Image (cartoon, rainbow, N blue to C red):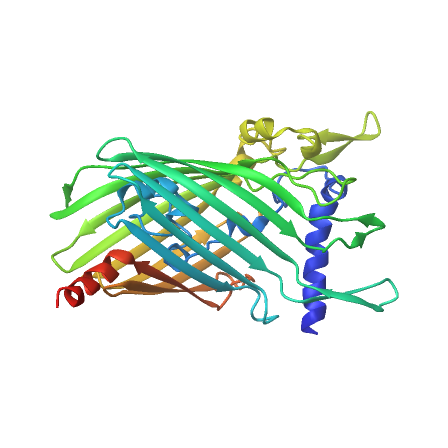
Length: 405
């Protein structure tokens, strides 16, 4: 039963990536108001929150204080890390209430080159577990482990005492079929390259309710890159090009207690699927919107702000919101909570998140937990995720007294 559930999930994924043009053609309506019109892309694993800090804060992370996992949310945050080097390892089970072997692993880290320059890197690996392929008669063909991964390298430069900018390059590999024939067409792994452009800025300290505070602002335009395809015959599909804008307010309540409130907005910068309206005069369906197969990457990015068939109101519905709260005691123990909202006509992801963190001399451990809102389903529902971060300066500080003996 579990393997059958995975086969069904993989079949739906393949239908999306190998035949997206067919899905668009099936949409037909006489009234655009209130119609579900979800934006889909290839390799959606790139949009999954990989770490447990932001994962516990409603997936908000564009403007948080810098840490090793900034590579996903905003590489420019690396410009203001306190340590010379840091590494984080994160793990998230996927669809764990259905199958036991689908998961996301994420390794990220940074190295400061000098006081103004920082290099960052990450490896994201998504495994769909073991799948048994069968033919049309239900006979066993072979077993295969579909998987996807992305390798990133970023460069961040601090431009002044409060502002940094960065760029990241990414290689993406997606092998969902192992070369199997899909509808008599030979498939192959999808490959693409992409880039991120980011910026991070924070204000001077100011007093808010008699508490020393500062505001941070972050922006990250991610996955700007080539389209991807899994066969020679199928159309190439957009990567999940995304615009993330965020702000964070940090308040020092006293010498031991601090509070951070973060808020992010996200919008996919790819074409909205068109719809077809029946024209009673011509007796034919009229295309409203743009066919994504005819749109170039640059056109898709700039046109994504005005191509929704339902007009400006539908464009607003495509914005996703994240809000998160983080409390620290003595910079050692953290409690976190958050909420993520996506319009019901654009995917309907709504969930609450919770988590905690513990920071010791040489490492920090974060946990996060997701609870779907309004009885909705979520692949991460009721699943515990964790991140383990290492501080190499802490290792050196511990080793120095031993060396001096």
